[in-house]
Length: 79
Figure 1 (cartoon, one colour):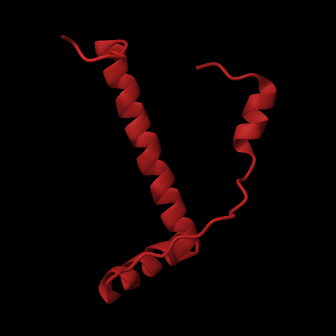
Figure 2 (cartoon, rainbow, N blue to C red):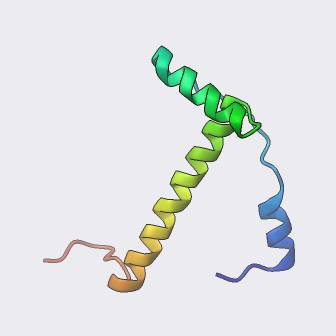
Figure 3 (tube, one colour):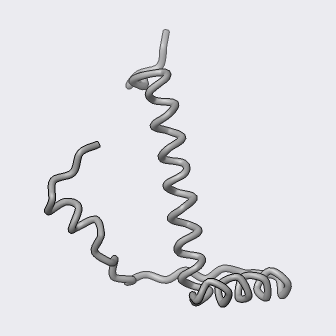
């Protein structure tokens, strides 16, 4: 996919964090998450955001690969 220069600048702009979500973690999960974040010089929240974005990008890449193999999806079920 080709982006124009202004689109690339827009894509690289940091997103304003306007919404929040609460998750429940076990004490060991929280301890390991915080330790990983600190090792990377991040807050736990930033690490979680990066992990989510990475997961979304991986799924999108997988979808693009499948799409390149199987082509357009049907808009209506096959009869």
